[in-house]
Image (cartoon, rainbow, N blue to C red; front, side):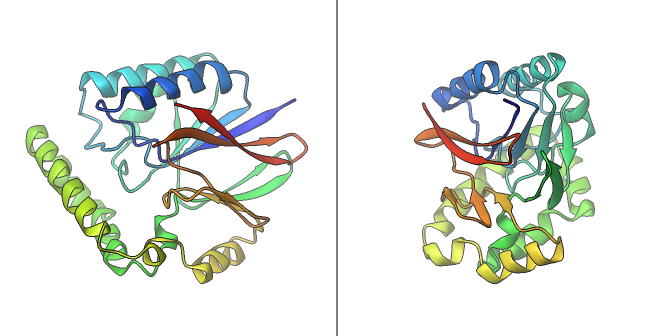
Amino acid sequence: MNKTLFISDLHLDPNQPNITNTFFYFLDHIARGADALYILGDFFESYIGDDDNNEFVKTLMGALKRATGLGLPIFFMHGNRDFLMGKKFEEKTGVTLIPDPCVVTIYNKKLLLMHGDNLCTDDKSHQRFRKIIRNKIIQTIFLSLPLSFRQRLATQLRKESKAYNQEKTAEIMDVNENAVTNALQKNNVTTLIHGHTHRPMMTEKRIVLGAWHEQGNYVQINENGDLQFIEIPL
């Protein structure tokens, strides 16, 4: 039976080889033969530009290139950790970058795809920061900085973000239901798939992809339009 797969929030990092190895298994054994794979952001724990050719990034890009070379269409959406993926990343991997939000029709089922952070409208500080870092001028300036400086800055920002998030309530960091309803109505869609919150769930209108911290997971839609949440042990 035909199938299309969705994942997000792997936060791949050289210090977490078990998660990386699980992704390789997923790519080689589960995604092989699928009609398409959608990765809805935060694939990397940190991505500071297409010119970062460290061995970890090159290994992952090589795995993606092999998968697309074997005929698997892979669609990438920017997350709040890897929004600097650009044209060179596409060229090196064979993946296709898609906008956030993105409406797709799969097996006659219309879906709204988002990373999810722009639905967390109660988290005012994140929305302000998101507006700054998604500014094309700011990104151009950042990418013009030396790679070593960008690495140090990204490390510092992650530390500060982690410390700051520990002070926020769970409700603030979750999606705002009005934002979800507005997004569905604006795009004339009844089903939304997103990540970011690390709170996997499945309802009639909203499917939330989980992070790959304690176990891998993905959502599968088959040719009948049936959606299924599936876990993978790390």
